[in-house]
View 1 (cartoon, protein in one colour):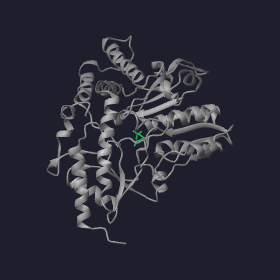
View 2 (cartoon, rainbow, N blue to C red; view 1 turned 135 degrees about the vertical axis):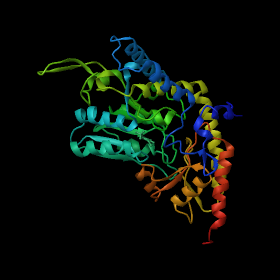
View 3 (tube, helix red, strand yellow; view 1 turned 180 degrees about the vertical axis):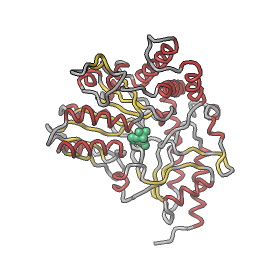
View 4 (spheres, helix red, strand yellow; view 1 turned 45 degrees about the vertical axis):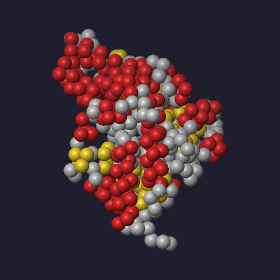
Length: 411
Ligand code: PMP
């Protein structure tokens, strides 16, 4: 039983009316970016038509409108994540900038020689590279939580990595490359038990499941607006308030300042202290509208429908001879990652594009996890709540057509 009317929902997304190669667009590249509902497009347009100003509330009427809209968006993010205070919500460009902010502020100030940073084997490059830079710069050690053949975190192995030198555990809640949902609450609690800090990469989770920061208890949680039906160029670092206030800022400039003298500088409290310069005001407001949209639909409804769709798709494509699915975790979200015997991933991507189906083929900025499965690239259809079983049928029909054109040779 589908918990909402998918046809009705689809009408909220103008781009889903596009035709590609003469066929209706099938958007199966949601892990790369999601499409935007009219409500988000309208909200951004409204901002520029009626509210546009820099955010200095007291200056004049439009400044007050822009400031209110921006701060309302911050409150929407707070409510969406169930953070304790909107002071814990810092706007940045996206998940990548968010992780770099933490690495270049807290990390530089708190990681020393011999300290240990733990990441998982599932990570996107955005949650590897900033930590590798930091570790190399400081003489710290980067350790990796291994995964099993289904792409699931090995908690026993993780327990062995934790110790008195562990300063940080940074891991993803959902893998963008193979779809694994990690036991985030448990990983976080185990890190805290040895006194380490926890950063959770929510880039792939916020659009698929309800995130509750009071349960998750992460010290930082990051995501990108564009992967949750909002605009590009806006994202969020959540950080616990006391921790943000105890951390020196990353970038310096206007907006973040209490008082500047050439001899010494005093910063505002979080979040402003981490928002130097004029931010992406309009897109923050657009992100607020996107969160309203998914909240109205209901994340539990979204998760239930996508689970159904993912199972439906998995059953179909698994049957195709010579198709190898990677990422077969018991708990997965909305990503199918596979290779098709006899075809390069580019060939499969092109053939699907010919039918109007958009998927990503490549390494998905997560080379370590693909190499764990002996691969350099996969084809990755990724689903959202506006996708349908009919679209999945078209995907599997096209793959079956490719199979017939080049049958699997008996070994
Ligand atoms: N982490 C994960 C798990 C991701 O999937 C992505 C985007 N593919 C990122 C981080 C980086 O997000 P962005 O490129 O929006 O900064």
